[in-house]
Amino acid sequence: MRLSPSDIQAILLTLKLAGVVTLILLVLATPLAWWLARTSSKIKGVISAVVALPLVLPPSVLGFYFLLAMGPNGPIGGLMHQLGWQALPFTFGGLVVASIIYSLPFMVQPLQNAFEAVDKNLLDAAASLGASVQHRFFSIAVPLSRAGFLTAIILTFVHTIGEFGVVLMIGGNIPGVTRVASVQIYDHVEALEYMQAHALSAVMLAFSFVVLLFIYTLRPAHKRSH
Amino acid sequence: MQRISVFLKKYNQVLLGILLAVLSSESFAEKINIAAAADLKFAMDEIVTQFKKANPADDVEVIYGSSGKIFTQIQNQAPYDLYFSADISYPEKLEAAGLTAGPTKPYAFGRIVLWSPKTQLDATQLRLEDLTRAEIKRIAIANPKHAPYGKRAEEALRSKKLWDSVEPKLVYGENIAQTAQFVHTGNAQVGIIALSLALSDALSKQGNYWLIPDTLHSPLKQGFVITKRAEANQAAKKFSNYMASTEARKIMVRYGFTLPDEAGQ
Image (cartoon, rainbow over all chains, first blue to last red; front, side):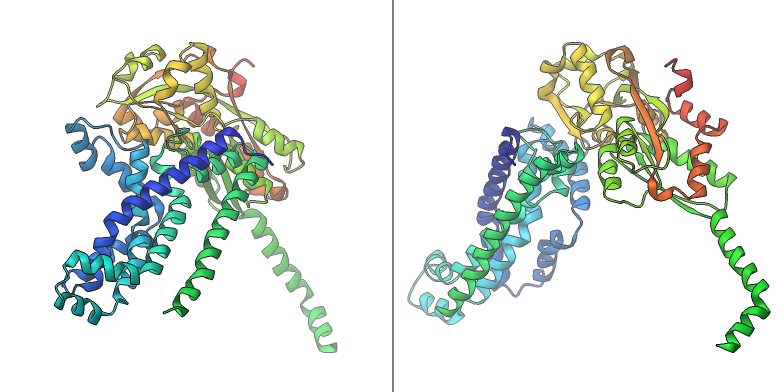
């Protein structure tokens, strides 16, 4: 069982997609999770529900709406066309945008749980000593939420790697651009190349197992140290 | 025990009658699952409707997908009774592996066309050479790695020596129906799709096509088989025979398929 150059290209592309999506989501989801953890706003329920939607929606629903919205006749696609930008379907950027939405709850929810667990008295005490909002966030909330950040980052990363249905619908299967590992495996199976499908699947299986093992063996240890 | 044997003796004619009735109704009303290549989507729907009219007792279910995927599924005991492939080599492989009940039957030759929605381009005026034009940015074809229509699209582009210049614009559909959908939604401007899909109601209203000469690619010879599991399924046999009927042939021709005995091969 050997990986072909196109398999390696697919793996690298998958890692690049997961990496870019995780970084962007870390920046976007942290303030959102912080707000959800602290707010008593009436729209909190609505926002929470929207964030959780990708957890329950079939990827075909997401893929279908992405394709319509980002297509030339859709609201996003029309706007991008007016701005003279390239249409998103069948591009790496399109996969990034779709994956951000697809993986959003995997970043927001662990962060939100971690932020909710931060002792409010500590934050209040720091505030009374004159610490700014940013200062309080970065020197109290972030260090106390280390485990939450780690879980959120790893889950987002592996969940993006595991993406298939959405990519199949909006990717267009272009080598090096949108042909990620999961789609490459599907193609191998369709072309009856079972050995190549095995090789790539085994890599995915081993990688996912190691990552999850890391999370599950690391997290209890961290809790004990509290 | 004695009572039961007396009961059996007394009613044995009745029981036999019930048993026969159950068995014969089974053989009259059977369920068949058909797995068909995506290019047959519209034609097969109509054929099945006609077949059901003629055989109201039989229950027919059709699943559409790519020929390669269905092949793999049947190898792994998928519950399909008939397999209509867009490439005759797949059912022939099943036959060679002893997974079929009877020989592979050719049923049609498919054709490929250039298709574009009217809002994008007038495909009747398009030729393969036009695909290199700068304003055409995205061209959809089925994945040549495993989709029969994709393979022929690649062959046609290669025989016109256009592959290298067109390849950077290509997006690949998982099967020919998804390829058509990429163009239908406007996400690709042009597609190389099956004539049978271009002639469907949904697509013919929205766009035009240009028939790609079949001298540019090897024939899209399509075949079907009855699978091993349906060996004793009378309805499967009936459906197989129905494909040779005037009604079924008319429908196939209307969707642009060339029938094997008319192809001169």
